Length: 98
Image 1 (tube, rainbow, N blue to C red):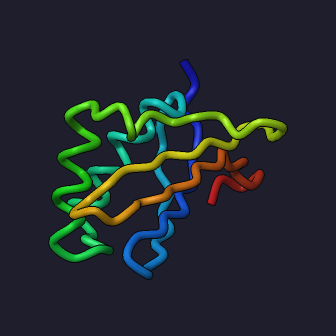
Image 2: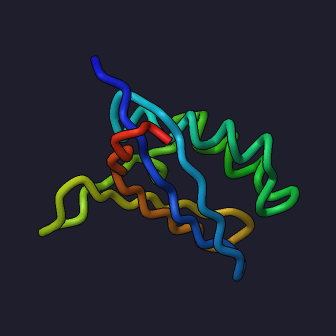
């Protein structure tokens, strides 16, 4: 299966974090993205909680396709009563691959 590039635009507690991951599909992209949450900690200590929740397979972290759009999904989750909203967009690599 081909590896694809996914861009995550995530909003949590007034902070927007954007990252990109390589995965075979949008479902596989979520746990790969959680690894970047652990490494980069864009939401401070809450990053670890969010990453663990997603890694456990918490159903709220399952990508849901956005009706009317191609290759766009949404992921939601809760941390300490606060909503996390992440949009996932399959991103086309430029011809030079960078």
